Image (cartoon, rainbow, N blue to C red; front, side, top):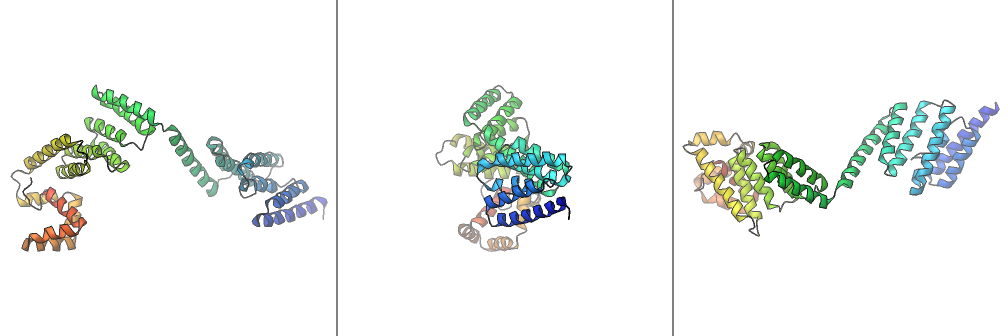
Length: 342
């Protein structure tokens, strides 16, 4: 056996030994074995990869070793280029450099080196890490941008533009406010109002719903939702929203506005349904997917049939079951179940 072949064999034995020591979490001993293998046979950069890689010790150690991991893997790349090592080994070293940077939360360099790794050899593992790194970078950027004071300033600028009738400009300011403080429902509520003025109703409805999602106790969110649904001529859903606003407004700080909406909605409902036959009412109501779902429920159909024989039974079911109460309210607003209301 030639000296070169003997050195290669001895290095392979040392790497195998180091791998075993690593699995036993004997990191210092494993490191020494990898270093010895590299010194013995520097034509194989695998030992350097293992020294510097996430599965090769340095990244298992305290945070201060990330820089050493990067240095070791950069040496693996440099030495690998010199000896024209397999491109897969070069890719692995570059990937481990990228991962070390990600662990340091240096996403720019992490993403750069992961992309370099993919250029050498495309693997699902590195591709997944790249996508994760890009998501982490985007989230870190988003969080770094949050500033409630600047959000309030942007929202006030939006209010000025809104009052001046420049609704498109106000939307831009409200968007900035939302980015600066996404947990404040007022930003979504204000943008909803501006989008409603611009008749971008589906987008406005999403903002009203988001304001409610962020803070379920935010009364203005329900009022905004009612206003958008009214503009969309979804009067029964608008009525449900304004009734929720009234229920949430325990401090009665929005009583006047809620009352105005309620009157406007109920008047519009009465006008739109004036002269409707029962058949026309049913046909209109059944265009609503929510009503369709309720009316196709066999158990609920039995409750309605029972109520035809005994009207008081419906009130009893509503008192006992919140789900039934909500379904009945939907049908009342749709006009299928008749009450003294419009």
